[in-house]
Amino acid sequence: MDNDNFNIKNSVSGVLVVDKPVGMTSHDVVQVIRRGTDMRRVGHTGTLDPRASGVLVVLIGPAVRLSQYISASDKRYQAVVEMGVETDTYDGDGEITSRAPVDISFEEIEEALSGFVGEIEQMPPAYSAIKVKGRRAYDMARKGEEFELEPRKINVYNLELLEWDPPEAVVDVHCSSGTYVRSLAHDLGEVLACGANLTGLRRTKNGQFALRDAVPLRKLQETFTDGDWYKYLIPAAEALSDWYSIELSFEQVDEVKHGHRIVAEEEMPAGKLARAVSGQGELVALMEYVEETKEWQPRKVFFS
Image (tube, rainbow, N blue to C red; front, side, top):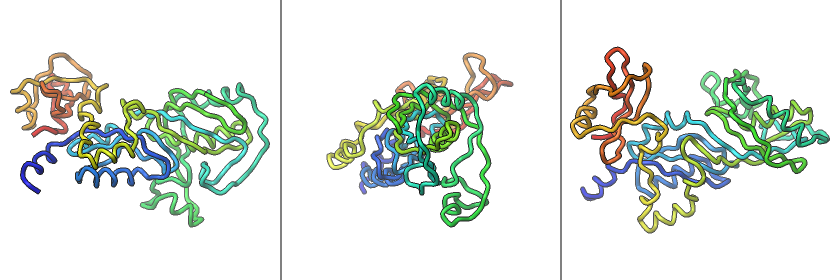
């Protein structure tokens, strides 16, 4: 590799928002992008099951260090729930454990959904990637081993029944990170006393990024051949566009990249996080407000 190419690759940092197709794992998508971009530092920010499609946020270069913040962002899905059929995995891939007649109205489903809105405790599926004593739950479940999972606190901001065409309901789900839509489907079936499982899932939003920002994977792959994939790269600073923003002067950029604090222009709550950007809009660092000294302390520096 010549020095010019090495320097170009070293300076690439940003976000690719991919519309993941059904049938691929999130890791598969990352591997395709690694090969296509010839970049080693590539990572996604929230797993989508192979049977799910939609928004997958992929970070390139130094921007991978934003993963924990974007992964924690709210999510939005369009879920297809089959009523009357319950499975051990809570989705269409599992073994059917029960069947029941479906005689429920649109209004009854809406009322049942309203009971899941707000901060709730949710039991994850046994067939999930959660670790129990260092082992994946789905590995233990497949072997028929007995184990216990702990319920999790999640936030469900809104559930809207978009369509009811028995036995399938289409639901718009707006929820916090960590929510299992499969569990919502299963629990909905229990409340309605008919059983249910998730048969389709499309993520329509992840944090600041929606389907309108996403490029289909096949279309992105075409740009790898043409060598112009950069046109879909979103600046890293935009990944946290809802954060408080600090525009740094040329001198402050130098101070921050060496780990020095800068004086805050206004008082903030203790521990507040902000993105610090250069005059050119590049993400320089993530900063934390220090209440005692009224200064911003660099926490992660991206610009060197």
